[in-house]
Image 1 (cartoon, rainbow, N blue to C red):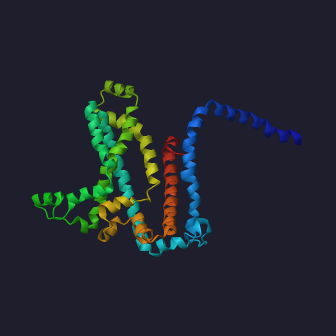
Image 2 (image 1 turned 180 degrees about the horizontal axis):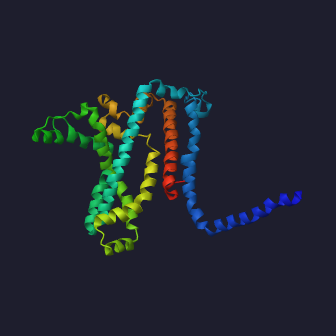
Image 3 (image 1 turned 60 degrees about the horizontal axis):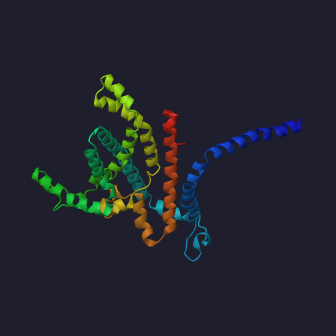
Length: 321
């Protein structure tokens, strides 16, 4: 009796191993093609994670990452010791990224839908190139362009306000305007890039859906609302989930280029990355900077898990994993 129960798992394992071998053998070329990508992930994404140990050490160059003495959670103390500044930076980071995700996705969708309505190939390529071009402009150059628009003495916007009879606004002394300015700047830079992704999905929609809708008398707007948007929904959710994973990360180069880390604007523009840059990176305290990076990654991971679960409650196909 004992020998029968003991041999049963081995009998079940044999067919399972055979199926696995057949599956690998039948897709051998695909597994070979995946090897470079897996090697890249292993070497540049997973192996460097061993360096996270520096977060819990008093790092010095002489002893290296693994030889430096342990200090526990001491490297997190600088961030939470000035809790009001840390909380302000966290709030600004989440608020600005939320604006980028919501308004950026909406504008990208509108652009993609408009691209899909353009019939002339030449005009379509010109429109896509014009919207895509800001993606290649650095934030340093974008900061110069912004200065020509809102400079208090010679800015185009200031002159337009004067021409319309309104008082001039010193944007570089008024923090309340900067969430709007930063959101518009992000949309200007990335909406064309994201629109290309949505447009690629639209081009792969079966034309018979639109032909049937035209036969039923649907207008262009009704086709967008009833066909295009529902079929874009999985892509929107996946891209949003990926963006939520980085909602605790800010763009340091963006803030350096557009605000030049102006202290007057910190109440609305000081994000986690600029706070860390000013506090520790300038002084070479890489262990403390890594500690904040771990804090951003952990909370970003938790948010992805939560939003992924919420998306799965609506439809299991919307989940990433």
